[in-house]
Image (tube, rainbow, N blue to C red):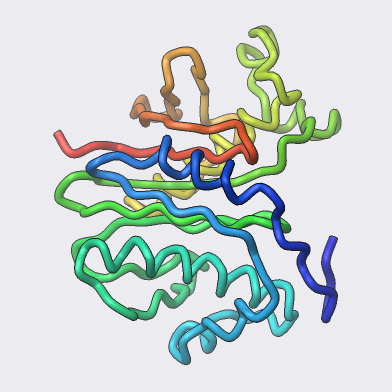
Length: 218
């Protein structure tokens, strides 16, 4: 894990990242994924930098990388060079008329954006293609999920889905969910939360686990 002045490695499979973001994007939801690289911390605009509490270089670098990705997408919607500061809750603040989400792991940053007239809520997550530690499986997986066939990553894909769902719902109405409040159905590309609402899922498993969870406008 990177700390302090240690540089992030440049992710080696940019072609696979491009394929993933192309597969995940649609007419309504745009996705960008990029390697976190030395110098990305300098991409933070003043209004953004002021809202990021951590002074650790690796944290600010990842935040900068995610915002570089987001600005690429926002320019498609006509928003150029706009700041994406953090709110008091830690969630990104998007321009009016936009919903979106940011995520990163140690090497890759991801952004997803859509127009709010098309998508009511949107969350993204990115995880390495590694098994979820056994001590987390009981915390994350519901009894039904533990009884289903493995997701191929020891529960890590289900974990990523729940992180994306959490972000989407919290951004929509402030509801804060526990892992057990979310039931996933990967075969149906959907997730249901405790109050009965359903979110659609879209995900890629190479070269990273990248998940979109969203609620379309009806």
